[in-house]
Length: 199
Ligand SMILES: Nc1nc2c(c(=O)[nH]1)N[C@H]1C(S)=C(S)[C@@H](COP(=O)(O)O)O[C@H]1N2
Ligand SMILES: [Mo]
Image (cartoon, rainbow, N blue to C red; front, top):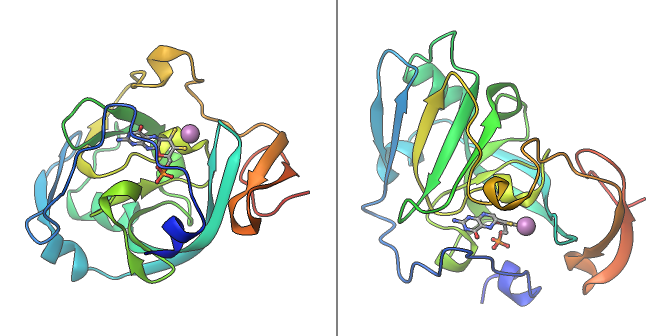
């Protein structure tokens, strides 16, 4: 069992669990507002400069999990596809292409946002969005699309799966009670904005 599973981290698949996914043959298509659209293979991603960030995934349903996430930065991907100046949002698509969500490019370019494939040095299972997922610790967890297959570079915003069902477009984290998954689900309080720690 992985650490995420051992801690009983909730597993959210609003569109239905995708089942077993093929890590070695995974691809990520990046297209839209850029000069060089590309399809990155699992191998391509592994060969890019890796980043490891200590960050929290915090759900609007009020739980937060902290750990070291490993992957590649959006900066690296955007550079390789030669993103256009007009690109203002990144639209993430999960496997099955039912679940999508968009974030401002400026947040993707912040240091703790990444395309992650490991948590605490263990590869992400399908339950937790493997082979690769977005990890956007600055915003509510619904912006961190799991099992990502595509990034659409957008000049304008479109609401995604949860945003069309009432969650905010900004995904801005709001202060309040929140379960600490690393501490057995104990109820604590989080501040507004990126959750670095409980208050
Ligand atoms: N494809 C997909 N990605 C998703 C979701 C989902 O239902 N489907 N739920 C989101 C929400 S609301 C949260 S809080 C996190 C939860 O991540 P976890 O299931 O790995 O704990 O994934 C996000 N990414
Ligand atoms: Mo969530």
